[in-house]
Length: 118
Image 1: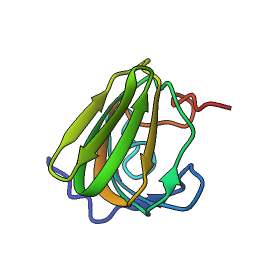
Image 2: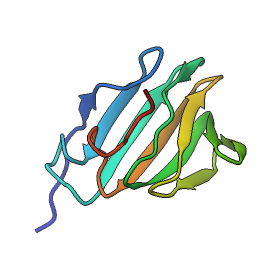
Image 3: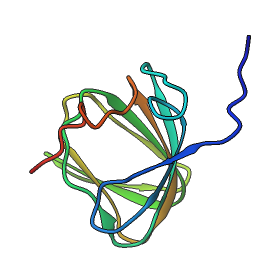
């Protein structure tokens, strides 16, 4: 039977300044290991450590832009665009001017499998 997810769970974010993460589907809100879906509200100037996760991450930018650093350069992902970071690739996310975006991770995001730098 289909299940309504009435509201997300706010989870703690990594990074230099606070951002909001509202997880709708994932390990925290629905005890789902196979996928996580979260809406991020990230202020201008936010950045997090680089990471080499064990999951694919699909990021859909709704407002603003997300900067994605990788070993071969930098991508600027604007509103209406999306980016895929494959499992095992090193990436570092930031939002120099702020952004609202959706992150989907397959399998679900876990602090144990994100493998952040440092």
